[in-house]
Image (cartoon, rainbow, N blue to C red):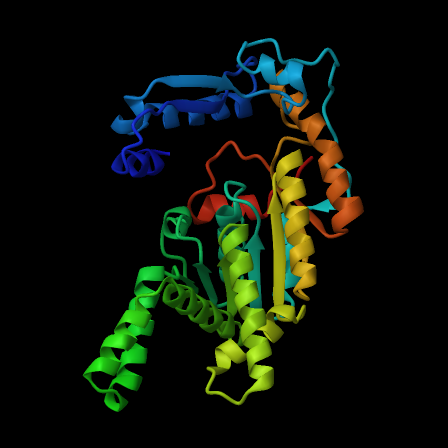
Length: 373
């Protein structure tokens, strides 16, 4: 949010305010999870950067249910008016939902390959990808954890070096510079000064960055032939750009014998090979994230890629919560969890909300092996 504030200020948009959504205040101080959630939010608020802190601010509390309909939406601005008269008891999750470790068991059986976590921004793809990578490394496998998302913070999430685990990021600026240097080195000897100038101008095109990132993505996927590659992929638009590029390259290779790198030539077949690439659609147990993930699933199927499983992250469904807001949230998650299982994927992992921030190898392994009651 502070980065967005600064970018807007740089282009002269200074009439800004901050809306702080989902601010939680525990109603049951005897609920450890409620106390932890309140403390986590308080810590974040206390650490607001100075630029954001200077803006006028509107706080909206964490609601027990999604504000659907005119009355509920109006009630968002009047604390205490969005509530339910229903008495929600402890929610129970179907036994069809398994812990993340069960999916890791199935992934591990192949011995190598690619795992891709996909979904909208802010649903925990980085956490899920890091937990999978660390658990595979703990089991003795060589693992490369990487991302195409410029906003991801893999190194911060992993926290410290893990034996057998390599962590990297496909940096657009670095990859563009590398690609530009390769093209210039390969072509400059055959060009005069005017030709070199035209080539340099062409390489300044935005398309150059797309090609460079795509090529790096293809090289990273190719490493799955020798080890496990876990890719925390970018939000949907960038992901589909990569898939569209793969489709275009694949069609081009089918028509021509041009000099295309092997990693690029084999990318789409590798992504379509369910024995090599396992796509995990990560979502939250709420209407918008589930339905956006469903649309992403349709796009993947059109590209010939069958998702391996769904991961429902940060769930309050199941036992272990006493605070009335959290209990009701858990109960209201159940229809969305059932929708995923019944409509989209019989292979479903449920990751419960954790009182400990999932940062560092120990906490990420605990998350990978956690089970909803």
